[in-house]
Image 1 (cartoon, protein in one colour):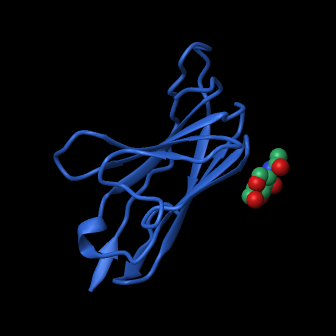
Image 2 (cartoon, protein in one colour):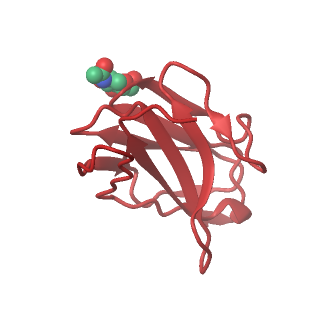
Amino acid sequence: MLLVLVPFLSLTSISVDSGLGALVLQTPSRPILKSGTSVKIECRCVDLQALTVFWYHQLPKQSFTLMATSNQASKAAYEQGFTEAKFPINHPNMSYSSLEVTNAHPEDSSFYFCGASDTALG
Ligand SMILES: *[C@@H]1O[C@H](CO)[C@@H](O)[C@H](O)[C@H]1NC(C)=O
């Protein structure tokens, strides 16, 4: 069984108070993986200090769902229905964060993407 995850290479700005656009590069762009394996989705912030990183997913024909909010140097806060065991987040510095989709199954097929803010939230 194949699973297709399609995060996008985004020009994302979820700018809370700076009003500045942030270039957030996301890789891989179109991973296809076997059921039961894991994929790590990486976000690199180019021109912003990503103090807070938001991880979202979007199922077809549905709106964005916030999965978790990660403040650098503290543990990510997960929304209901999402767990650290399933979606471990790494946020070691202010220009990088990754989200792993572990033990992926077809129902995990989704757009996954990140947004960043240079303001600490949550
Ligand atoms: C941030 O962490 C990532 C992943 O460990 C690393 O590739 C990158 O060089 C780090 N950037 C800085 C500015 O430390």
